[in-house]
Image 1 (tube, rainbow, N blue to C red):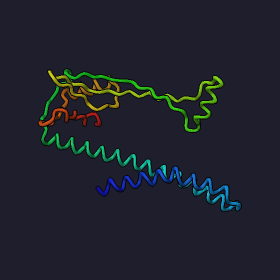
Image 2: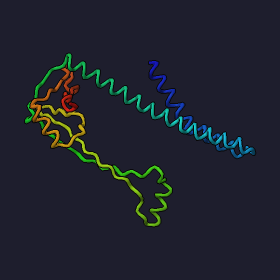
Image 3: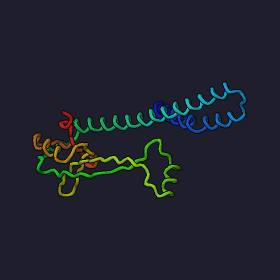
Image 4: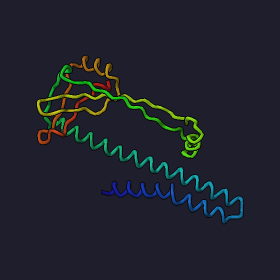
Amino acid sequence: MKNILFRTIKLWVGLLLISVVPFILIISISFIDDLKTTIIVTCAGILSIIFGLLLLKRYKSSIQLKENEDIKKNNAKLKKNGFVKKIHYNNLIISSRNESVETTPYFYSKQMEMIDGLAGIEGKKDVKKYEYTILIYKEKRKLYQSTEIKKAPTTLSFLLAKEETIILYIDPNDDNNYFFDLDFLDS
């Protein structure tokens, strides 16, 4: 409970530092006549934005760590108490999907993008391509899917053929709680 409260406080402080503090500092600059004070206030505003962004980044990573811990605890529980099903690699379906994500460079603002669009100029876009592979095991009435694996389907096929069998752990009380043991992919 204390951990959740700490993460919530960190989120609100980060949001405050990013949004409210710089706004107040920008308004106060217009009322300051001294150049030295203006520079100090401006630097304080920039530092508060940077510090706020770092807090939010840590907040996001702490949530991700918490989720990973929960998954690891669940997987350890399934390894200990779950039903073990050994599956030959020929009984697995390898499915993949490709995803292309267009992003604009950091320095390329929305205003610049809109002006370029009005002028008929194709804006700068960075395209990142991702390939995800999953394993699928079908039983008579149930379909089991692995988490996304960051390997090409052909590479995964060779690794599965080398391993020959893969283990699927299933919760005896809830067949929707399961996981494929993919530790052999890391070695």
